[in-house]
Amino acid sequence: MKSHRTWPHLVGGGVCGVLLLAGCASQTKREWLAWFFDGVPTQEAAKAKAAEQVPTAAEPKTNSPVTQVTAKAGAAMVVHVPYGDRQCGECHASRFSQKLKGKLVDLCFACHDDFLAKARFRHAPAESGECTGCHDPHESKEKALLVKPGSQLCFECHEPADIAKAKAHGPMGDGACTACHDPHRGERRFFLKPSADKPPD
Image 1 (cartoon, helix red, strand yellow):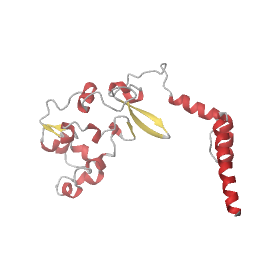
Image 2 (tube, helix red, strand yellow):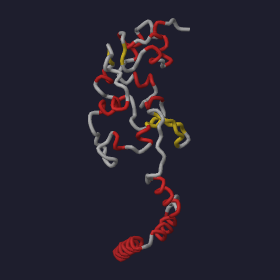
Image 3 (cartoon, helix red, strand yellow):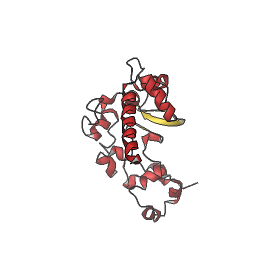
Image 4 (tube, one colour):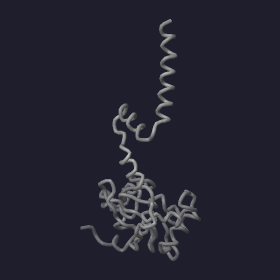
């Protein structure tokens, strides 16, 4: 019987507590939450964080190349300039939409030179417009906005065991794929660069 009397008191107390918290001012809510939980930010800290996330019209625009390097959370990040300048509408239907304005490859070549137009050989991902298979359109810790370090990215599609069969692949273990191969296109088979003809040091 005693447990039946305790149950309504607990439910009633919980409902009153929820109503009390729901009706309190923001500062009071924070004080209550901070009493129960560690790490609740102060109202000033919450306002400062919100102000950082709201874009302002006065932010300077950059005329730098397609990417820029910025410090973010202690690590250098390569930032795609339209993304860094919050020019979402350059690629997206609006700054509030993830829908692209057109085909991905057309959007990329609107700013980047169409290096495939006259290429004799074309790497399949580049030719089919799968730019984001290798490049992050916003930011990355890797050069050229790569989604992974060079050789790791190559091994997503190319089997290391198959590549190792080629006698010329001594540098493969160093992950130096792009020292000899152009990752987009080429005038020679296997997208070989002129540097591939040089004997290793």
